[in-house]
Image (cartoon, rainbow, N blue to C red; front, top):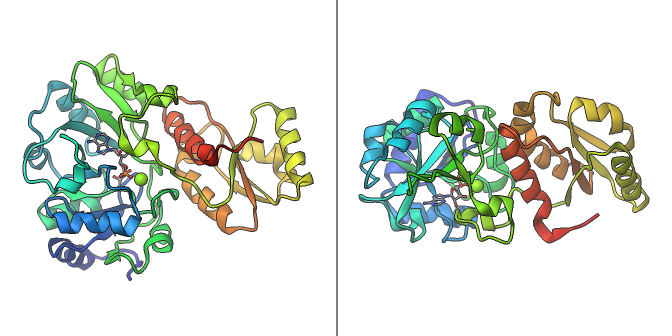
Length: 339
Ligand code: TXA
Ligand code: MG
């Protein structure tokens, strides 16, 4: 399996493999995707198999231009055109009513399809060279943190997929925003991501946030949001924001014999680093984009380290911080552990 820095002939080879119904991992600006020809049912099923993904969880399709997108949606409301004009190529997936020759497994039995145009030259060139949209979930084993390097993909999927195009670390580091526009009067964020709630509001006016994201007793409208997600094998806790409370938690875990992995900003490392065994830096506290781009790498690195538990920093849920906190809470809520 190839994990070298990519060469133009790799795109040609990968496109040939995709046309032949194989699955190939490729970089996007958010996270690495595991791609297959979205019109080929046999190929799309290989994605679910390689990831161990539940088959009622639909996949996003990736297009290289808007004309290609129009072949797969029954109509393109004005709101979708606005989102496309402002944010494509980029990290906003639009959910619309589907049409056209999509493999049934892509949409997991729904009448709708999630589509985005990634902002990454390798991804765009690969889609162009393949000539069809690529269905691509994040290229991790189901439940694990999404991959932000080719190395992460390799760790999870080596031997299960045809290849990986290595485009270096991804930029955004968290997945795209999933925006439901099936009711154009009620644009709804099903999953916060690379394009923020605030940015969408500027372009669309009122934007709703799926009730599940605020109130866990509601079933999520985005099927993927109900599964275990983003979790390393060791427990993850969110570090209390109050200094004394954080110190209490750290000493309690020490007393219990835990080896503590801290996932924090430079600033919190100065405060609490001496009470931890391993530290992974999220960058400067004032730059939440850095924390977003490092979160998954940090969860994976601390999982591989001697740490037996991860304590991660909370960020304000504004801008990219909303997506960061959504992923961190999901990583921490699995198994419902309380401190
Ligand atoms: O940034 C990203 O979006 C990455 C890169 C590879 O593009 N992809 C990604 O795919 O995160 P995945 O499969 O890991 O997450 C797709 C999410 C899931 O939560 C899924 O339930 C939701 O999008 N989704 C897909 N199609 C949908 C639909 N028709 N209606 C509602 N939610 C949908
Ligand atoms: Mg995923």
